[in-house]
Image (cartoon, rainbow, N blue to C red; front, side, top):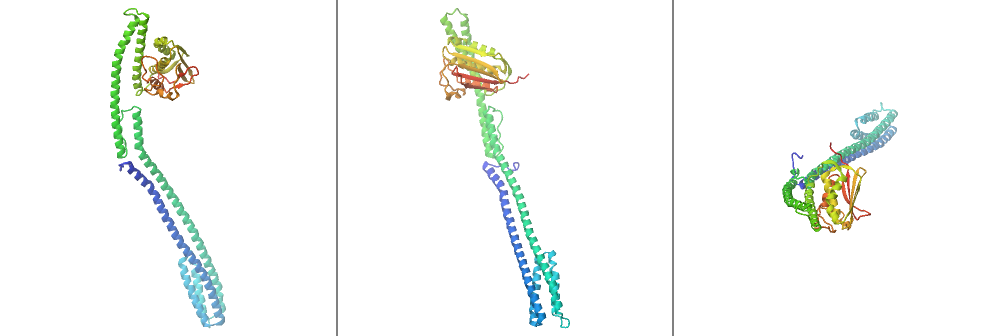
Length: 477
């Protein structure tokens, strides 16, 4: 059907589906009414015929008794008037037998012939000349006539019972036929309804899949919707939107590449100059000057991390492939803590690191980015003289890593929103450079790329605590 006809709209398709689904039920109802009407007419006609047959048999029996009485009186008295009455009764009985003949089937109609012949012999015997007339012998024929009449009555009763049984059988056959037809049409209606539901929902599901595909960042495949024209138009508009989004995405990527290049070049020069000053290349620095250079170094490093976070977040949205390798977590934490040594010393923070030496399969750059953001968060939001705790352990085939710090607790209504991109809570960050609001979002994306989780949890010792769980992924050899 879909090959030879294509609906112009969802409304048209719905109406056609409705009529296709309802038509079999209408046919079933119409056929059922017709079948029961025909059955009622046939049963009524048969019932009338059977009633007439039964009545005719009863009248025949009464007339035979009257005929026998008239014949007996005529034999006893010899009155011609009684003979006339006998002949009238005889003619009436013969007419009744002729009327009974079409009411019986062939099998039971044979009982009429012997009775008719016996009645004719009786009439011949009564009207015989006086020399041949034998009254007693004539009256003796009534025994045979009564026996034949009783056989006819029994045959008629059998015929009535057979007809009634046949009506029951016909009713059962019609009922079975109607049940089969109604079941078949109901199944057809069900399949037709399911077919049209599928046909109506198919373009909607296609649109839903395409929108989900676009939402996941796949903008390469063209969108083509098969279905009614109005849905095809929606598909064309979605494809136009996909093209626009793809173009905007390309422009965004290009913009970020240019911005990162333009920012990293002067930042690298700034970091190099600060390092040269710290090394005393241009002369020995006094304590005050060294502290200023340390601040420049730390903030330039923090600025570089923020820029890299922006780039990492953009790439994580589209590239979630993992390059797994064995990561030595203790060494990675030591390197990260060393990079924050200046700010840790300047804020007099107490950093406690506790964990078993372990090598864990992970994408090293992504995990380093996640841990770096968690440590940066803990260090920058921790007040002077505060405490930072870093703990990890392997438990139940999971790597549990917990980063906690002292400071102002995160409000409950902000506990989930802090992982949203560019969202910043009420707690103020300590330092000259304010955060971008994507550090925790980048960290969670990196962890989720490993099928892990990163959540804010409660800690009895410290008010702010983040827990990371990484499953043990299989390394590809």
